[in-house]
Image (cartoon, rainbow, N blue to C red; front, side):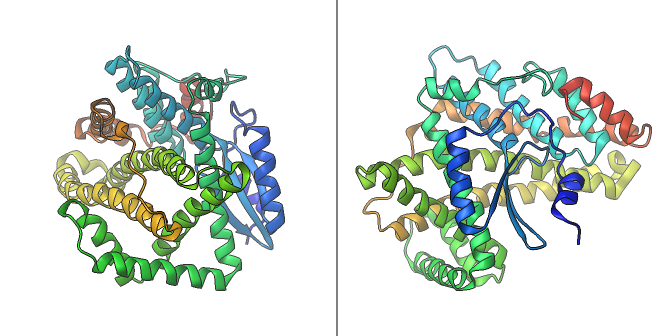
Length: 388
């Protein structure tokens, strides 16, 4: 088994001069909480993007990837913009596409030809984020504070931190894991047995799937989500006091943003990954033989993905409400039902998973993938985004 330092070197391409680092007070708070549990908190900024708990040898580490918060805060700032009176939907479209394309560029670093081609499309788009190697200080967090969304971002960070910490706790405290699994499974049985309006049937099916399926990984993720919500409420109540129901409302409002961001990115990446795997299967015959097959398969898979994401989010929020014994399930922010939100997301997500866009990129990929070396693709990519 490779050691921790070797793992970082091999599997986490870190930027030597990241443009975003964690707020000092939050970083110290997370380090303090982690150290008490024997969990090393380490800030990184890598192409892997997501914060993650890992165990290497005798060590337990929480890799706090600030690249995720860089992209999330830009996403959150975009939501502020589209709620403004002077919002330009064309600019919003370009803005969100730049975030999602940059996400794909980094996530597909392991496929250098594809990452390069995406970076070329990104560089020629209507809006680009400042290059990674040209931004000594990024004011996006200051902008969020100015518009009153700094608190939202900080609550999301606490939620994600506790989620990853729960993975560590479950690995090291089998009794806690067992009790939480039993509690969430029992609540899911209650939800599955109850009568629900038609629009909530998918959520009910998600609860049924969880208790009938032996997928303990899925169950652990749901438990981590629920505990992250309830522990965030408890922590904020302990730190600031005040009306408990108001704190629950603030936490639910905030995490809807990070759940929405994750669902958007996962939905886009899932289609690109499915297409990439199909192309690798069909190789040079993709355009002739593979297009109809992958479109047909993904049309079926996409409905499941969208329904699954929404059902899981609703299920987690309901489970958290039941665990918290909150009298009233916090209501969704009207923004998520607004015309500005729908007009911002639907066209951009549909564009990013549009067959014509994928066909264009992957046709070029099939042609170029064996033409140049890894180093040549990486150097060309750096010219477009400022990072190998």
